[in-house]
Image (cartoon, rainbow, N blue to C red; front, top):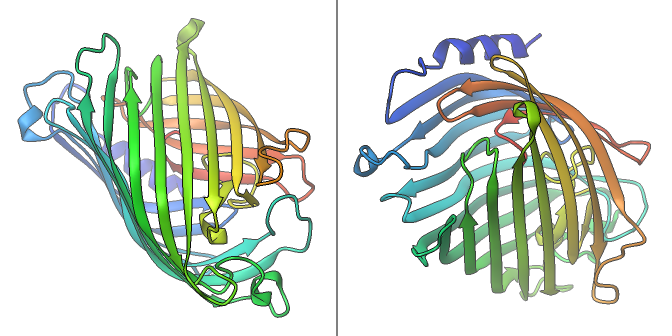
Amino acid sequence: MLLTPALLGLATLTPPDSVPRRLVLFPLPLVYYTPETRLAYGAALTATLRFRRDSAFAAARPSQLTLGAAYTQNRQLLLYLPFQLFYDHNRYYAYGEAGYYRYTYYFFGLGEQAGPRELYGVNFPRVRLNAFRQIGPGLSRGKLYAGLRYQYEDYRVQAVAENGRLASGTVPGGRGSRLSGGGLGLFFDSRDNVFFPTRGVVADGALLLRNRAVGAGPAGEATRFTRASADVSSYHALPGAAVLALNYFASCTAGVAPFNALSLLGGGRRLRGYYEGRYRDQNAALLQSEVRLPVYRRLGAVAFGAVGVLGDDQTRLRLNRPKATYGAGLRVTINRRDHLNLRLDYGRGHDHDSGGVYLTIGEAF
């Protein structure tokens, strides 16, 4: 199995837990699988680090960057650099990504539409930056941050299904769009561990203000939209070193956003078991839970379930049309000091064509 060399490589590259190091590198052959890509292979370099300024600060959060390149069975090309950085005794926090993607996706329609899926191709560079500074240092539990957000994405649709919905021009941004803009954000963090919390809360609130999408209008004109979102996770210790993790997500969009920037459900983080973007609309809400269990040494297991709903201008949330998934997975700890895990999940939904395997680094939430 192609996964085996990657796991062996991770085991040999993980430093002893007793060695305190500010920088730990994990170069590895990249082999993973998702419903969106099928088998993907390439190389990645993941770094967990603490800045020199924080070398004597025992409570310094670990930062992480991953530089990767992959090619998939679906002839997709991915070049990406996601990151999250803590600096100056955790006073500053930044996260985001920069990347270039040559991708093929399936489009399933908007809202509750039911119809044949359409394959389309797209090339796009993407930049997302979120920078925060701690405020309210007098808080007894956790840290509260405030800051700015910026996003840029040049979504160049290359090929669409003949006579399909994207080709018709009725879907905002169906022929491509260029998205740019920013907004404000609040971030709260009381987790005891960044990569594998056993207690605490992390909350990420965003308000994107009148972001501009060139090409999203019916005649290719520019449109503007505003989105408010909240992503909250809580962690609760259970007997036997088990952990209950809960995640609440909500997103509300006003104005005309391109279809690729709408609120969506599905993929490796939200509603595992459905294709990423299987469901998309102006508004979305999601509740998911996961029980995480230690098995033996570096090996762990999880069981999870989730339910989500969509909405639009007429019905804010269609609570009578829920989408549910469930599944299980395995975890292999590749960095014991910070409890960074390799994640293998299988999720299943209620549609006849749902179901997916997810192999990646880090927890879903």
